[in-house]
Image (cartoon, rainbow, N blue to C red; front, side):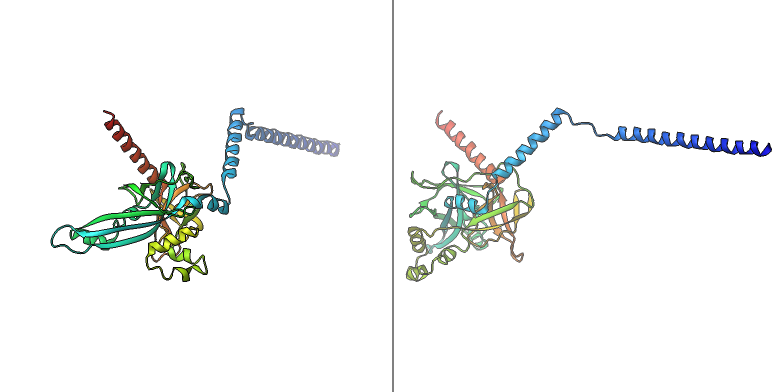
Length: 324
């Protein structure tokens, strides 16, 4: 009897243990169920979905606007001119002395309203030139003689006038009058800022006449008898060899109005456009970094926007003054 009572006690304890385990297990399921319900992500609202769809559409549109480098170069080439800029330094006082003449080869490009953009040190070649600055300090006066722009599709150069320079950055503009039928379209200026890592194209005339002569096997012999650089350039224009070169790279840094990129450039490329993959101007090529191979510096298009805005304000002020 004592054994039966003991067995009953054992079975009762076992049953109670199973029941307790069932309660704990069930409690775990309930707790787990509550946890899953608590962490469930709410279904996005119609407003949020609409915004996501809008951003997706904008991204697709931007991708459609991006072009192949070959298309960008082909479209922009005729808008990029080879610039021959000359000036002289003359003594301002004392006995008459011969003037010192200088010539600079560089690059420029057309924007809206017949405006050619380049660097200030191209439009004013004595700007930033250490030798010229020393002579100016000694009393010599710089005088711009003329600045000619050779466009790829034109057999004759156009003379630039009405120069405007920025006091904040190495950028300048000038007015150009082109023939009515000239196949020269203005380049579009970017409205959005650039960022490090963005791919870019730099188009210009590196090494000036030398590079263009290299594009023809017979021409160097023909031009060897032309002693004047300008006569050589005139001949290149007549036979359609004013053709800019392009290099591709990426922006490595953007600091204020300055751009740094690894697209190769050389002397003669100054003033050329730095283009994004939509063919928009994001900067103006300006300089090489000596000792840092493959790195170039440019001026952000923001500085150009500021200069063009200042020119427009001056034009309006002059127009208002003349109407009084």
